[in-house]
Length: 351
Image 1 (cartoon, rainbow, N blue to C red):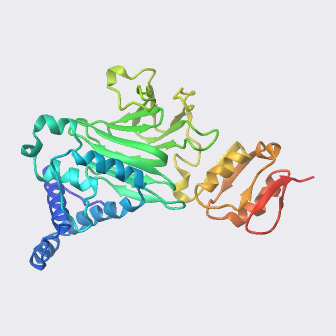
Image 2: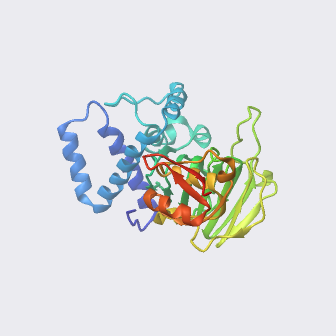
Image 3: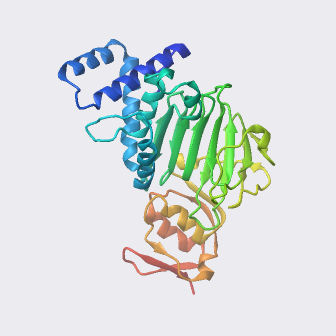
């Protein structure tokens, strides 16, 4: 639970103290005397212990990050003047950057350098079938769905999340001085403070584009350009956002793989993210695509090899954790039968 801090100055001070303690506790020279001082600090105010636990959650979430992401970070830190000696040999990037930008202060790298460098950076990931709620330093809360990977970067003038794969709900803390950008494949979503969901699943056929759904507030969705190397470019300034659309509560929009936006539509009656309640709803969805979506949460034990069966349209609401009920329901919902009663069954035409 995010601690309640009455003043922005107190919240900023607490973040600095938490980062300082966290970095110090992971140094090789941490002593029993240091630990006693740390315990006295956590016992002095319940907010101290709550805030520190939140940082530990972020530390644990690091274990789900892809190894290649860590390797990229290591390369990026090689040229940085900040170094950290830890029991694990490598201070996790979020805390190395946060300590450099927050604990050491502006005198460490200089104001101009910090303007272009993140003052906070962290990556989060969920395993298949897992969901994760992540509180960020400014009070923003992210809810990650299964098999989701994203990276968070906070700068002095803006906040940025790159959704690499999967989907998440964002409850953004309002800060008019620092807009919040979500970069999801071909889409850029910009807000100040609101609650919305973003999806980007490039590996699922028919769902390679992005989707943005708003539960509260107002967001702007625009198409991103590709960089010269073929990857998607970074966030564009307001003046360069082309063809942007604005969404308010109860509205959503999706794009194709290149970011071409469809017409704005209403959010379905089950909300912006029914997966939070372990529900997946399909409306006239090709069976192959529905199975691919269900497989993100766990093995269904079902395969489709016949193209005509794969193209059948499925409608209904399912619990992705309940593969047994799915097996029973499919022959009633579609003209199909299951061939084989072992761990894996093939969906074939009923006749």
